[in-house]
Amino acid sequence: MKSTITIFVSGSKSLKEHRLRLKALVNNINGENRLKDYPVSLSMFSYTNLGDNQAEYDDFIEHKSDIAIFLLEGRMGEKTKEEFLLASRALKKTGTPKIYVFMKEFEERTPQIEEIEKLVSEHSDSYYVEYSNLEDLESKVKTRLDQEVEELVASTMVSPKKKLFRLGLWAWAATAVGIIALAAFAGKVISERNDATLLFIGGGSAVNCLEEYEGIGNIYEYKEAICLSVPTSVSWPIISSDVHHRHAMRGAENSKLFYPVCLSAMDAEDASFLKMSNREQFVNKGAVLCYHLGDDYLAVYVKKDYSNPIIDGKDSISVTELATFLREVSKEHFMIFTTEEGSGTLTFYQKHLEPHGMTVSKASLGEHVDKFTDMTPKSKIRRDDTPYMMLGSRYYVAKSVYQDGDCRKIQVLEDDGTPIVKSINLYFAGYNLDGGTSFWIPDVMVEFLKKLDPRFNDVIKKNKIPRESERVIVSMNELLDSK
Image (cartoon, rainbow, N blue to C red; front, side, top):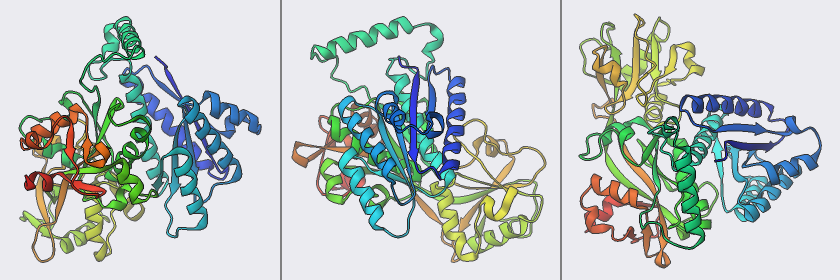
């Protein structure tokens, strides 16, 4: 097994802070992998490591890099362009390096932007991922690097969940990999079952909602699945990448080890998945399939022994009251906990608080704001005497804190008294087969869908879902209801 993933970062020399932040990110990921007992490390290089010799850059990109990351802010310099084209030629010839392009969000589509879009589309059959700031860039890069590590670990035939590394089964793993490689070389079919692992990516609302479905339970313990907590804005592009890039080159039925499924508390639009590729190119390769799990509503969780005239004795408050409360307590010894930037839950809060001149962020409220999560046992909620409020929802709350009785729930309503509802959806890739008359999905996803809704037994035949429209996002609920 290859134990090191080598990464080259290309882009303007002015993006010094970007490189420093990504190198720090790699160190953090390596630390996380050591705690997981993963025998994999990441090594990141850029021009600062290789001096000013362009020939050294070229050799490193072409022969030594597993991944090439390109950072752009509205333009691509000639040197960066040459490095991109070199990486693209090497990718087509040898299969490496994988190419990831990250572009700073822009308001105007300039000729330089159009040139980049054309270049990326023609030479990598991929697309770029937009980022809003350095924190957003770190989050999106981390998601992809985590996935690369998981794929490398899984390729040894060793389950990360069972920690087989500790059991000394390396000899067995090497033998199994050798047998499979030999059989594949001989053109024999080892098994009819697709060995893809479901990679659940997204927010906690959907994770908790799925527990209410019979046969699903705790998604972290669901067989043949791994769950990563990332904001919705980060997870959507991974679905696009799977449709647009990997399976376009290798064929849908030769699915990679990981099949991404986005868990989202937001309703996606075509623009959520199409950043540069036109619609026709995308739907020719597949579509984004959406299954609506249910509805969630915004709710805040306040430390039980905290007293305030705005919230005392209430089980619901209006958006106006919430904005007033947050504005007042931000001046006191009070903590405000939110979900990740870009998550469906926080996006809904920001959308409804903005008309009241309220933005919940460190930039506006300083150290009064911190993040919490329900995706790990440690929820990061301070359990001392500090008063706090969690901006969560019915399905997203630090359960360990709530179940211990440390806080109480207050539903957030529109000013007219109606609940603020957000959808909980699954988004996953459907790959075109049979000239575009059906979608193909792997066995593990078929099994999962049938547990969600038994009606899928009548819809999915031999891993195929009938394609009844040319939409980018196809509603599985509409398809089920039409049968």
